Length: 472
Ligand SMILES: *[C@@H]1O[C@H](CO)[C@@H](O)[C@H](O)[C@H]1NC(C)=O
Ligand SMILES: *[C@@H]1O[C@H](CO)[C@@H](O)[C@H](O)[C@H]1NC(C)=O
Ligand SMILES: *[C@@H]1O[C@H](CO)[C@@H](O)[C@H](O)[C@H]1NC(C)=O
Ligand SMILES: *[C@@H]1O[C@H](CO)[C@@H](O)[C@H](O)[C@H]1NC(C)=O
Ligand SMILES: *[C@@H]1O[C@H](CO)[C@@H](O)[C@H](O)[C@H]1NC(C)=O
Ligand SMILES: *[C@@H]1O[C@H](CO)[C@@H](O)[C@H](O)[C@H]1NC(C)=O
Image 1 (cartoon, rainbow, N blue to C red):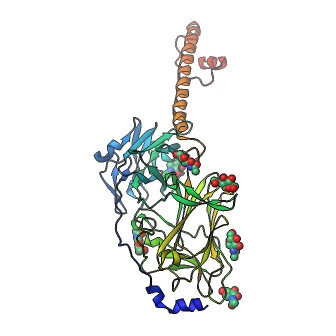
Image 2 (image 1 turned 60 degrees about the vertical axis):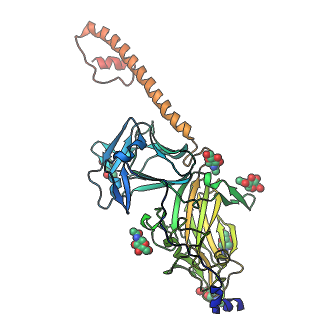
Image 3 (image 1 turned 120 degrees about the horizontal axis):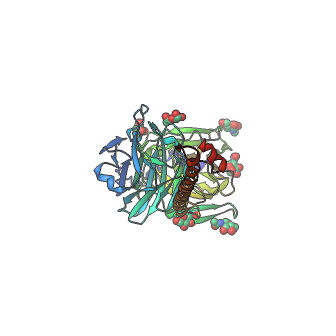
């Protein structure tokens, strides 16, 4: 208690810490492609960002395909951004190749929004998507939704090009589509190379190395305790959604907090490119209002696919304590004590200064739910804040097939297309041969009975009966 009072009453405590706030700046990526697919318009502006038509001179060289068409939605729903009014439709594998000037992590965003044209329902498409040899989508079929669907991937590129391939599914609708594509080089600090691996079988933390080289799909990006953050307010044009759908405890002692002050980004610490002010200036927290520390956890649960590893990034920023050195808490990932007695003051040396922690968890044989909890620790102090969380990101790591969507590798996807087509070709040739020989037989028979009969369609079942029926 003495410790508490001393800290509370000593503004000097605060002043002994230096703060080097990073001046706010605009991140300008070296590679920055915003493509409005199927559009001839030189630019289409959404959220102050300029998307270039893939048919408009400047970027048309990025795209190669023999059999693609562009389609337009003549009756877009009101409020649907203009990049979703057009799409490019592929009937055979097609690729976009983006020259890369900056090697490192790139963000790839694919935009899908189905609409109907007079002769095509985009909702009936089914296809695979590959990015630089990773399968990012397999048997993807976007359901009819009123809202556009944006899928985001983090891909390490050290080649000269980033190549996105769309492969229609042979056995399905046989076409693929996309409305818009973003390829942006991320800031260097977005994905570090090492994270803490939560090994549930040894119940130990280990280093997970080579994180930045994994392909990742951003599955959840959540602003805890706050409102939706749109690309307009994020220096890497990300979207952060509110946490209400994931927050599981309606616990006494937990509350949402909004902070109106300035978030102090420090040199060498977390940058705005890791997460923007709007993420750190809101949180959920556990507050002790009397002389006892509440014995509660705040828990968030995320539905995930089994059989993959996930990166869980937790964002913290003490926007609630009245002074340094008052906040201690535990962090659990999938029930495992991932951080004991986390002391943000010790790490950041100032209040309202951001920090994040990365954990890799294995979802093998799990129940498909990833959980994150924050609760008081043995050092938590009464009459103070005893737990806080500002943001969560959940990213899926590629599996050993270099896939983010299934057990099939990129080569297999490409071969399945040519195999399927060879099969179609062979059956077509076979059908033509059969029809030819049958027609000769039939013709001979007919010459004997009737003068002329025309075929209206191919026989489906080539039995003698059918041939006779066709004769009638
Ligand atoms: C497209 O047309 C189909 C069939 O009429 C309908 O079921 C579907 O809802 C339509 N989709 C859109 C996005 O309008
Ligand atoms: C997790 O721990 C088990 C038991 O110690 C060990 O056999 C396994 O290799 C570890 N897993 C990883 C991915 O390091
Ligand atoms: C950006 O953030 C500010 C401050 O939180 C908010 O008032 C504004 O509505 C946001 N703008 C958009 C387009 O999201
Ligand atoms: C502190 O407050 C909580 C509810 O906010 C209550 O359950 C608890 O009994 C109180 N403890 C004491 C020692 O007053
Ligand atoms: C908080 O969650 C952890 C991990 O699930 C658990 O071990 C601990 O007992 C929980 N604490 C409370 C107060 O429920
Ligand atoms: C992801 O793919 C790479 C190959 O590109 C592979 O080396 C790595 O082990 C894969 N990641 C996992 C978690 O299996």
